[in-house]
Length: 338
Image (cartoon, rainbow, N blue to C red; front, side, top):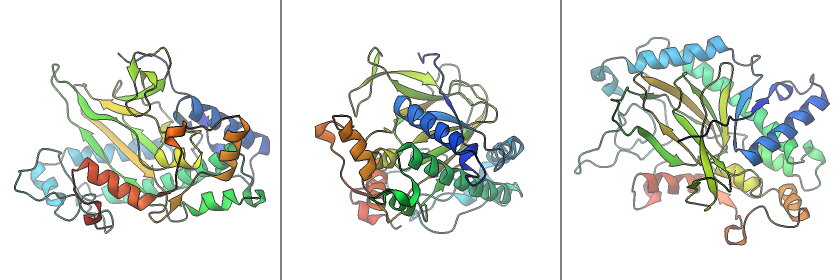
């Protein structure tokens, strides 16, 4: 049973126009971000009205819901095909054993439905706005980790910025059909996101997204770290996006900001819609612990990570291919055509 604790909020507005905002406000927002990520790994992002309005967000959810309401005979025209495991529509039912796995491509043109007619322009505009928020979060992260533009002697700031100069972002529209009262409701099992930042837009369905909050007195266990914890609900709030960090942030923060376990338990009698946007590093980026983050950990007397999990450089594209291959039981990650 999820606990009634709530995620904290972060006002990102000081980083959306750094030239005009008060430096003290940026420092406070960065300090808040540092606290929220070390304590939770998740947060509610606010203060982005200058980039995307609540009306814009509602329109994205409405058009996504309208697409899912279209006949299956129409949606199947966009079905994910052999050689393409990223673009198109899929209802996530088992594939016949004789059918070759269709999950082998992450580069290429998107496949857009003809109906609703405003689906593509609304979603493309939304994704552009999410990229702006992603870059703002990177600026806040740089300050939270103690980087100061080009002033850092180890040039950490330039390295961090270079890792998202051409971000390999991914976005989805996900529909969760209503389930009968006796259904188990595990729509997405417990997992951690692979990459950088996830910005989630979701409809008001309560109790679906759940976050694992680290707590020594908790009754649950993180299977990766062995840490004890408690599941809490991350219900959508008006004017907010639910935001969390992925495993690449854990790498470059030297383990300070850990990717957090989360899951979706959908038991609602209504149709749930969510639109996650994954602001990822460049596909060819090699992510390493930032010197400033490592120095901060050493100054505290110990590494942020246990000795058995010392962090090594990670080539994001190779890491992503291995993850996808594991998820879809592919024997050789190199068969993924990126």
